[in-house]
Length: 110
Image (spheres, helix red, strand yellow):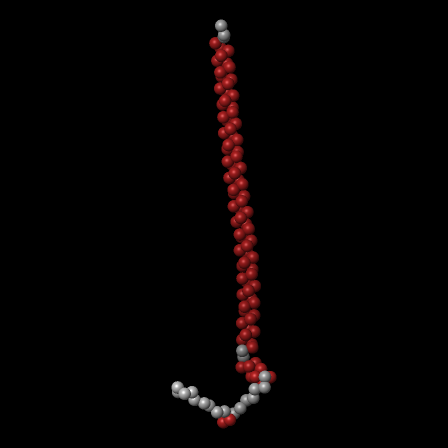
């Protein structure tokens, strides 16, 4: 007849083995979940940093365009001045006539 204690000892070892396996699988599952969360976090941080760099580049471009726009407005004001228009008219061959030499024509509806 078999020793009853040997059966208990073998069952306890087998139970402990199953318990060790469960602990190992639980630990492995936890490690996998933590690794996935960490990878997701790194992807999100990287994406946020890339968007931040893109926004910074857009802000620099906006500043450059605003400066260029201000320079163009100054140039337009300079070119549209009365003195500049008179000078350009003379360069194109226009002549200043006294009012007495100008004929005004009325339109038919007036």
